[in-house]
Image (cartoon, helix red, strand yellow):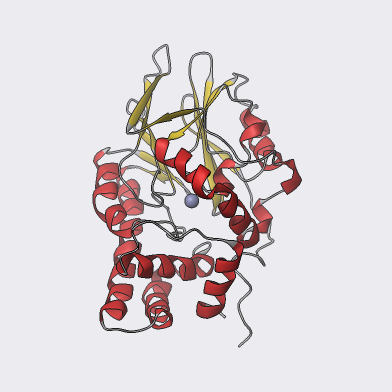
Length: 320
Ligand SMILES: [Zn+2]
């Protein structure tokens, strides 16, 4: 059997981008499993959620958004530090770039390595990479919660850290009045999970419980389709949890019995593939996911920094 191409390096097919209006002044862009985006109108300003991998890619989303509103972007909210979510920030001309404190710290600590790693893994998302002016620096940070009043009768937008999960610093954007949540990569709706920088145990328990407790009637996850209605929202959250719990069981069994990382990978692949194998980025993510959970079970508290070299090494060991 031929070796699998590294990560998503051979995924060159263009994805269709669809802008959906979720409520008056609330927008989401989905892209067949590529990263999703959001935007929320205030009375005289816009809040944008996520920024894609390059300014050129972000400008295409902004052009679609501009068919609906010409309000200036006051806040650009970053759900977490991953390069494919933040490096397009300069296209927004935002007054303020908001993230959690933890995310700002992660950008300082590992933003450069993450940029290089993600570029190697998913080159297609880095449209015109030379348009990136440098790392994206949040200009306003918070620890647990930040509320933005939208004005008029639009209600408020609550940005909230609900516990460690996909990374150490993910936040969600919650519209209590409209009952809409932008969950970033903390919830995927019919797309595979990337857990290479995750805290699998916190995520599968308290963090997902707190997202579920919002009782949203629409949920925009990090990738994949929009969940509409309470049943679909809960299904997306429980699918995310099932993926994590299956990993915990399979990797945990092999780790406890003194097996190898490769055996853990194979057991996890076999357990997840029937349900999730056909979903976007499954094969790409799984080696990195299993390595991080293995590390976590070995007592490594914070995720080891992914570099282009470590990416290749883990890939060759597990998928090679
Ligand atoms: Zn991410």
